[in-house]
Amino acid sequence: MKISVLYLGRIECKKDALVRCDDQNAMIKSPMSAILIQHPVLGNVLYDTGNHPLYNTEYSLFTRETYPIREFLSIEDALESKGLTPADIDMIILSHLHFDHAGGLCYFKKTKALKNVVVSEAELKNAYYQVMTDQAGAYVKSTFDLDGIVFRPISQDTALADDLSLFIQQSHTPGLVGMVLNTQSQGTIITTSDSIYTRESFDRQLSPGGTINKTDQEFYDNLEKIKSMRDSYGAKLIFGHDYEQVLELVRQGTFE
Image (tube, helix red, strand yellow):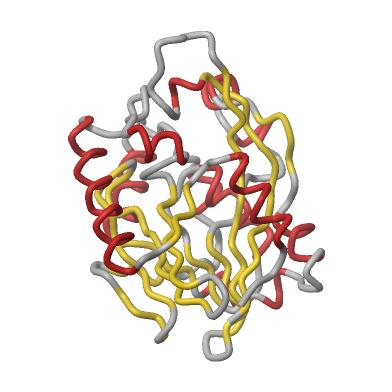
């Protein structure tokens, strides 16, 4: 199994939206990323897809102003840097269906990957409910409600292979999907996705200041779950939007 973290640009927004802080004027760089897993059994697997290329027209004014995109790199170009095209991807795993994770699905129209999109059942139901009841928030219907798309919903923690399993979190969104990867060179890696945005948030136990979680307790309960998993596996964590961590992982290149 070969793993590559792909950098897909960045948002610059109020820090308090991601990590609770006293300075209401503090800003933070929030990277978009995806993880490419080249697996001997599953084929080429992609975890998340980044933003939609037409974000200036597809996203609401509120979304564009609250989470302004300062740099955009397409998942298509990121895959090309690894010698692949969207047609080479066999499976897409979506941590959740927010615009900055599902937006790049448009690059996979008429590919086999679009008929093999793994997402949690709870997340899928929640996303459609919100966009169909005018409560879309960070969901953009046009990014995931695509012609020909076939979702493969999971309702519980699921092992896709001996060295790749998915677990469901109740934080950030209902049914957020994280991964446990058992690698040769790095040991066990756990991806938190947006349940924990940054290392600072994890280390200092700082919940997001924005209205992402229904309650702060939801965040703290999930934080304890991630800590327990980390300690049990002796794992390294990859956070959802940690700018320095993503850049370092990209610099490291592909690892096994």
